[in-house]
Amino acid sequence: MGTIYQSIEMLSKEKGIDPQVIIEAVKDAILVAARKQFKTNEELVAEMDEKTGMIQIFGVKKIVAEVTDKLREISLNDALVQDPRAVVGGEVRTKLRTEALGRISAQTAKQVIMQKVREAERDTIFSEFHNRVGELSTCTIKRVEGQDLICDLGKTEARMPKKEQSRLESFNIGDRVRCVIKSVERSGKNSGVILSRADCEFVKRLFEQEVPEIYDNTVVIKACAREAGERTKIAVASRDRDVDSVGACVGMKGMRVQSIIRELRGEKIDIIEHSEDPVAFATHALSPAKISRVAILDLGSKHMEVIVDDSQLSLAIGKKGQNVPGRQTDRLEDRYQERRGEAPGGRAANGLADELRRPGFGVDRLRPAGSRCRAVAGWRRGHRRETRFDDPRADHCRARCRQREHGEDR
Image (tube, rainbow, N blue to C red):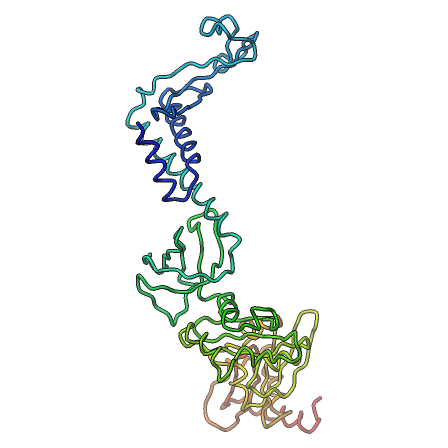
């Protein structure tokens, strides 16, 4: 029966678990199977013989002067029959026949052992990796499960869900990739280590490797926002006035940032200078668009208004609305923003925009048609609304615009 210890030793090395934990799991499994087999509620104890590897089961009863629970207690006179050295307060053990345990009991014990081993493995993985969250790691693609990638970290397997992958990337089994440890789940369906290549921390760790000034904290990454596969914006600040924070990240002839772009498969990266002034920071975040004016509407609710020229509006909004509220610029600034375009008509266009926003006068009710009247209805939350009118209400709009231009608004 020495093979039991050999099997336990092999399993402990494979799973990285203490052998004593597996031995305790085997004992617990035998006890669960014995209780089901003998259908008893008495206290049972399992012991393993170190020489033979045999597991023995004992029923334990406490010696008392007066018995109140026959399943767990025994009188002194009855205990003396089994053991002449029995005393009150001691224990009497009765050996049970393990040969009575059949196939069903063995299957029950196997399930309990596997469950205990999995729990011990999860605890070991959690204790090893929970302090490494946010760390850059290199792994090997081991297999594909649905849309998730299963990666080999050496001692354990990790999962990279579809949402943590960039849309520009595709990997094959056996590829070595760099990724960041995003989280470690202790329980649940997806318990284990979760990896990511779409998280902002991944870009930060890459900059720490490529830029020595960031590694030694001369340059600090203040904020980072990312649309994986599209664009990344990072805000950096220098603690040394003689060090240019943006230039240090870009490198000579762009060598440093180009190395990161290659790792991200061509994803665009914007590096801007951080500022404590929210107006200056918003101007930097929306570059290269030229900002006409920035007004803070409500500092408490973090609401600001950004005015840009019509020719700069699409640049300020960004490709596919990357700079609109709730996306990159707001994650950098932690503010809600409202962007408006300044049309050549000036007050007339703004007056028409106010009128179109009046309750009961929705733009969607006006049918786009010819070019008799064209006005910019304004932009809210990054969506541009242009309206051409061939509708009886257009006369009312034109009259309203003229009144606002000449100060005749009643």
